[in-house]
Amino acid sequence: MAFDVEKFMANVTAQNPGEVEFLQAVREVVESLADFLNEHPKYVEYKVLERMVEPERAISFRVPWVDDNGEIQINRGYRVQFNSAIGPYKGGLRFHPAVNLSMMKFLGFEQTFKNSLTTLPMGGGKGGANFDPTGKSDAEVMRFCQSFMTELYRHIGAETDVPAGDVGVGGREIGYLFGQYKRIRNHFTGTLTGKGLEFGGSLIRPEATGFGTVYFAQHMLAEMGDTIEGKTVALSGFGNVAWGAAKKLVELGAKVIAISGPDGYVYIKDGMTPEGVDYMLDLRASNKNIVAPFADKFPGVTFIPGKKAWDAKCDIAFPCAFQNELNLDDAKGLVANGCKMVVETSNMGCTADAVSYLVKTIAFAPGKAANAGGVAVSGLEQSQNAEHISWSAEEVGNKLSFIMKNIHDTCVKYGKEGDKINYVKGANIGGFIKVADAMIAQGLV
Ligand code: 2IT
Image (cartoon, rainbow, N blue to C red):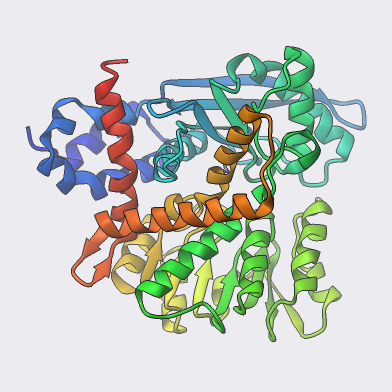
């Protein structure tokens, strides 16, 4: 029974019509796995991949709330519980106007592989709402979060499903969500991660995704006999993930020359300073979703409206904002400008044709490997909550660094092609095996 990529994709496409992002994420995995499956026919025989592309459960619900003008607003909330073969569902919540079922499914599918790569016992899930936090007051965000949790609480739990943050959901939102969960259930448990330090949060969780992606980049560079010191770096976004990456890059002596927002990018001629890194937090907290004020704040910084950070000449690019934010033209532009490495830090940050081009041309890491540090430290937060203790920053940091090295080693193990490493293939095969073997061992469930 040979595995046929196009036949498989034709079935998935018929079952999930119009779910463009989900189908993109599935195709990437299926193409990476095809040879491996044909070499290991038991996975084909047990229809593991057919089962993996079907979420165990997908919940959609109404989220009514009242805005500051007294007007009633209705949003749609989701939780997609994708795969629990290796642990309770785990994955973030995204609040963004473009959220729909396809986006939730692509993120939940990717999360399953990513969580497996961390080596921690976490299944895959994702959720969110088509709520736009831009310009909302604190009170509006709180009322929205309370209404969202008033439905979500019945589907989650410390041993069932543990949500966290993602785009549009940070410490403030997790605080409001946790408060409402605790109030309804009368349980103080680690059912959400990314909590404040005063109520069960983990040190290093805010930094973890950004730190992890930089550690991953260091391992990629070491593979090529190089280091990160002195490298010019372009980042997209200025949220939590871009902030963590910038903080670690500046600390390690790299030169961060661009960050970006929906309004354009800022070019930082002499590289970002530690003060610039701190100011990224103020920008995010302002809730305006624009990066332009960074150029007013610091001398030697130019705002380039309407352009992406990929216009800036750099050695390394870290997409840290949203899916499909780096397309084939962007990729070709980066390479023409001398870029040697793209480290996808947003989930599916590059379009499929950009990924194919980058994998062939320079060093490329997919988000499910490079950005796994965030969920990995969420897993460590769960462990600390379960033990009712908190670890030092050093202990968490060391574990994060060890996990990122392991993920890199896994990518090398399964992705080596001659003297190059295909990190996409390595991450997909490496993430697949553990989940697939667990599914086979547990029978048809
Ligand atoms: O995409 C991701 O891995 C996250 N948004 C973090 C998920 C988590 O559970 O910490």
